[in-house]
Length: 216
Image (cartoon, rainbow, N blue to C red; front, side, top):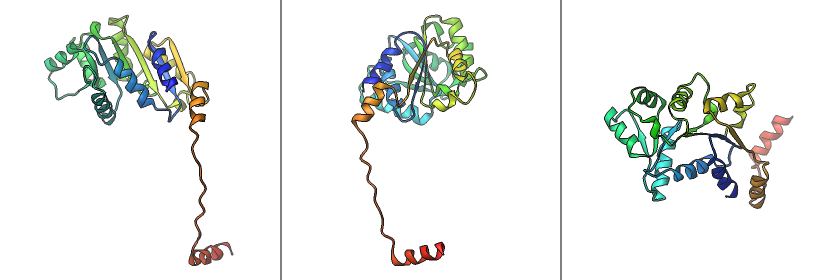
């Protein structure tokens, strides 16, 4: 879709926070973003994705025959094995607990990281492990990007200046909002309007008697 391509183009310039309206396909945007970085020439880390989502993205990218299929970095890997994965490049899904330990132990080469993508960015706060990781990353790597994706716009209006807080955690300078009433989105939705049909189910004689008794 045109607006999905525009989202990818928007994220090519600096760190950013992308907020979509719910139901607009954040998983497709994430998939397209990951596809750009499935290459051993760089290293992109993904935070805050659920295991089921990691499985989905990996499976879909395998079908796309990308150059280097993403991996999930789990506690099953020894420190030296995780270091080898980092040096191999590409896209890696990693938990906050593992990544913060690897960064502090210098098992993860922060200077080699091309960027970090934070999925469900609405959940990040200054007190979370993710925010601490991003601070460590930005202290040691001034050029790598940080992108946050979210389709939970309600989370950004529930608390005063919540958007500012999240963008500060992401070190993001750009905010990209894609609500349903955005012109590019609205054109696509209007072109494929749902076919709504109203169906009336005739009640049986027994149900009609019950209904009459309840109303009397």
